[in-house]
Structures are given as C-alpha cells and as structure tokens.
Length: 183
View 1: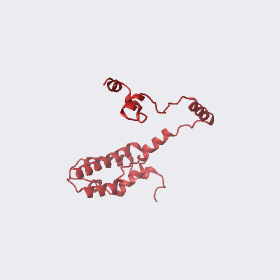
View 2: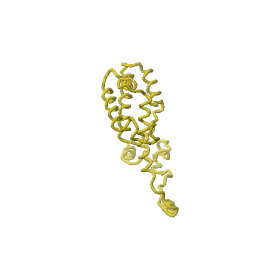
View 3: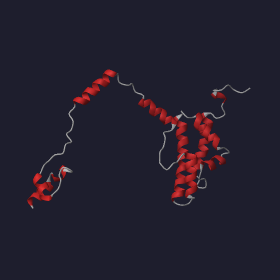
C-alpha cells in the first residue's frame, strides 16, 4: 500500500537527499568537459524530469531554490561563454538556452517563485482608507506647482542673432551671456 498524498515522510527526495544530489551536480558544473545541465544530470544517473520535479516540490523553499538557480546559472554562463568565444556553436547554444532556460531576444526575465512570494508579501501592505486618499488628494492640489511657461529674457540677443530664445531660455543665462554681450 502506498503512502497517502501529501505525506512528506514517505517521499524519496527529502531535503537532505536533494541537497546531496545538488552537491554532486554543482561539483560536476566545475568540470570543463561538461557544458550543459543535461550532461551533469546524466553523470549522476539522473534525468531532466527529476530536475523539474525538484523545482516544483521545493518551489517555496528558498535555500534549495537558490541552489537550483545557481547551478542553472553556472551552465547558462558556460553556454554563453562557449558561444561568445566560439568554443561552442553559437546557434546550438542559443537553441539550448531558449528551449531549456527560457531565453528570448527581448531579455525579459521573471522572478523565481520563492522570490516572487517574498516580493508580493512586501507589496501587500494595508491600503489607505478613503479618508486618507481624500486628504492626499487635497494636499496634492494645494501644493504650489512649478511654472513651465517660457521665460522671455535677453530680447536684444534674440533680435541681434535671429534666434528664438523660447526654445531654450537657459542657453543665454550665466557666463555665456556676458561673453557674447562683451564682444
């Protein structure tokens, strides 16, 4: 008879066993003859689906997920360096990065689940009440605003040089004005 669903004591992959396997893979990541995570998984007699399983069951365990992402980053870096310095075929490296690690040409990245949960907790602060929002709106409307209307100054320079100083009124302030006026 098998163990009931959710019974973590009956699971083969406990935290210590997972950490032991991650130690082996991390050691292999330093080997120059191993370029991809798939090669390292084969060396420890494991497979890609088990790696995905680890990412799912340890999704909210920050310590294990940090190790998993660190190991993935080692192999990503190896592929990038191999393509950059032409030790590996750049097209093959891009194919592996795109299909195994979600690389795209836009460079977008998503937060890992354990960091996303932490990030969302920090965002979930109590929302201000309607009275607080009303007072914020009133204080925002009563604060003085900066005047962005063009400042018409130094009209004699505008007439003399045929320039429209409204486009850049600050251009004629300071030492430049004195130097032009002295000539």
